[in-house]
Image (cartoon, rainbow, N blue to C red):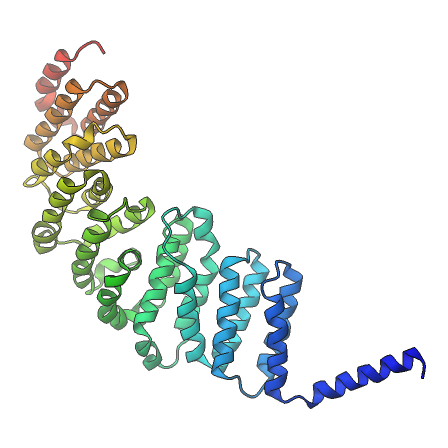
Length: 405
């Protein structure tokens, strides 16, 4: 027998073996090949593996739940870690769509758990990292939107809140990613409201930062002001903000402070602020002003009611931070003074200016004195033109006493 004839016989044997495989064995063989290629950085290599596997999944009669969960975990986790090409994300999306049609519940459960395990909390979240996870967010929202049985969503309520909170946290690092997330999220918010109402508080106990990001996204959705659920969420927000923004062990990530502070507009003066949040602000500024000052600034900037009654006391608690050697802490403290100015009347504004001038006069470091003078200018810029004359004498008297430095 010639060498060519021997090759033909071998090929025939392989074909016969492949044809004799059961559907499950054929699927196992395809998954084995997929496992070897899914982490390949080459778009062509893993692209072919996705295409072949997708066709196999469409063709077989039944896919065991364990196989579905494994395939979702492999494809999504590798996408989060390795992929960067739009075509790669399209392959993953197509596979998830096929698997969800065959076994929606297993696909959903695996996707929810994979997102939470693959995207941990990170304090140095950059814009590029946020933008890279937009496809992951789209897959989750698309899958939730396609649910035909509300019972499945209810049974996985805590995991849904966890995955959405994880995505919200990661989207918070980029303005573009945040806008896309909020726009997509608005399409499923209504159907998930019962889940949010029953599960967010429970989720916040172990993952306050992610819960804070999710609540912020709910508040950023169009027409959120008209929702009857904002009062309920404001109560939860007050508790989480105290833990994550005012009294954390370490300084909270600035991107989280910026996003979550926008929800403060839904805070009611009573009882949310005056009875709950304000006492915690005072306590936090006394305990660790270097950590809490950033959260305090974000909260005060976004409140929607006057602060004349509490402004002097809050300002007094920030005095030490006004001359802090750290420029970021110093600027945040001056930002608190400016925020209080915007929400106070002339008598309080006068006290704010007097405090800033007192600190300016006592400061010895040139950088600190410059920051304080710039802060005085920012406060003055907030005051209405007709009110400036009332404060002119006080300002002139103070500046006249300032030394030549």
